[in-house]
Image (cartoon, rainbow, N blue to C red; front, top):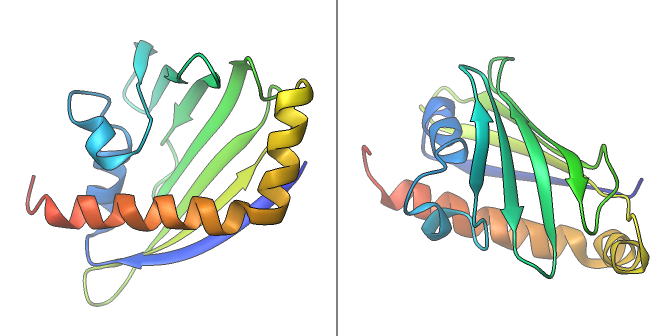
Length: 145
């Protein structure tokens, strides 16, 4: 399964980054581009969410039961195979900020997914990295929210 590894840093503490990542309410699209999240069920440390649009959507299980780790695992999609995932590992820094390691692994379930996985292997680091930096900036600009 092609995987992309990205490392970024932010001035916000891990708990603020996690709070933004698992906030599926209004304004999510301002932080996470094209998220369009619909929550089907949730608990204290998990959520079952459909994200995306008709072109490419996936049902994802969010799991934040492990401190400073958030896993998003595809359970159903029109593009990606079950088990495709995103894993955010957050390391607190002495200055109060956070180092973010993101690994995105994608396996296509059909021609569109296979093409997407191939493109992810070639240019995914740049594209996903740019999206992560944009999200980080938006979270930082939120202030104490």
